[in-house]
Every structure is written in C-alpha cells, then in structure tokens.
Amino acid sequence: MEVNSLREPKMADKVAAVLRRMIVVGEITEGTMLPPESELMERFGVSRPTLREAFRVLESESLIHVERGVRGGARVQRPRRQTLARYAGLILEYEGVTLKDVYDARITIETPLVIALATKGDPKVIAELEEIVDRESQLEPGAVAVLQLTDFHAAIARLSENRTLQMINEMLHHVIETGNRSLQPTVGTHAELALRRSARTHRMLLDHIKGGEAEKAGALWSRHLHKAEEFLFTGVELSTVVDLLAK
Image (cartoon, rainbow, N blue to C red; front, top):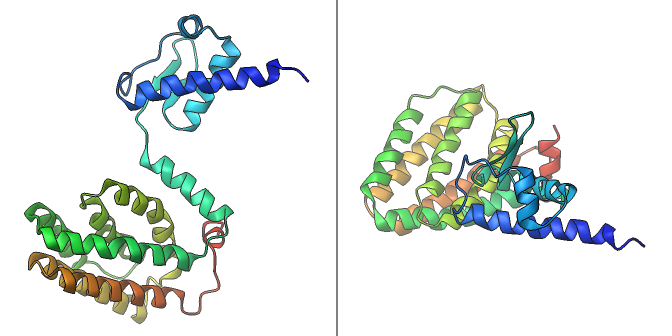
C-alpha cells in the first residue's frame, strides 16, 4: 500500500481547515482573491495537487469560488445559508424522511417563535408583518398566491432573535414551499377558501402579537398549522421528501 496516497488528502484537509478558519473569522474578507498558488504552496509547504484538493474542499462548502483563466484564482465568498438548506434537503431525501415529519417539525419550530414575537411586541416586527398581511389581502388564487403565503411563515423565523432556529427553519423552508406548490390546489373553490382562510389567520395572529397575547398566538398558530397539514395531505399519494423533490 502506498503511504503517500493517504498523506496527500490528509494534508489537503489541514490546509483547507486553516483557510476555512481565516475566512469564517473574517481574517480573509468576502470578495478577496487568495494569493497565487505558488505563494500558498510555499507558505503551507505543499504540492500543487494538495493545494488544489484543499480548494476543492472549500469550493464544495461554498467558501471560495475558483475562477478559471489567466487572471483566475480562488475568490472568497461568505458561507451561504442556501448551501446548508441544499445539503439538508439531500440528507432528508437519503434518509427517506416523510413529508409529514417535515411539516410536524415546522409546527414545533414556529409555534414557540410566534409566542416569543407576541411576548416582545417589537414595533418593527409588527410593521413588517403588517406589510405582508396587507399584501396577502390583495392576492387572488393561483400558484403565485400559494408561494406568497409562505412569506409570512418565513418572516416569523427571520424576525425572531434565535438565529439557530432561523437557519433550521430555512433548511425546511425549501421542502415546505415545494410541498405547498405541488400539493395545494391553486385554482377553484378549495383554493380560494384556503387562501382566504390562511390570510385571515395571519391577520388574527398579527392582532395577537400586537396585543401581546402570547398564549393565544401560540394556540392559534398551532391549530392553523395542524389544519393546513391535514388539508395538504388529504388524498395525497406522496409520502417522502424524495417523492416530492424528484417530481
């Protein structure tokens, strides 16, 4: 067995780890071009293949973008939440996670978030939710309306102070949005009723938040999400995330 076949990737991981930390803590800022390969090879004491393997690791994590050509190189970019969401979606698919499991997770995450928003009663949060609710009152049934209704849910997480829960919710948001678009009727009487019901509930929740009625806000939102889940999954054949995203 060739020992070198193990040494090179391990060294590449070490180089990637050093550069990763420098990027994450801000020592190398977004948009900066990393030094030329020759300079980095000398600094780390590694070969060109090892350095390029380290670049591939960082590029797979969306921390750098390697630009080809004479004036190319590795340009630093900030970590993207979309990357996290994409990988989370792949894992959900691979693990055979059910759609109900994802929607149940949303209930578990969003209910405490609306309670927290109602408890704090931040005027800026209320103003932003008010804008969304006003837009919803003008919607007509259709695919666009289904997508725009998810804006309110996304705002609940985005406006909360718990950034970890924000990111977890964003991880699930792509699946939820795709599910709503695929499973919820967009035209007809049922679509119109669902649209009006959701918009009305969003307005009621906003009123509870404005009034500081945290317990009522949590109870209303939990009921709403459970009913929405029942409405979506009635008569639906899809059962897993992979069934949905593979369509």
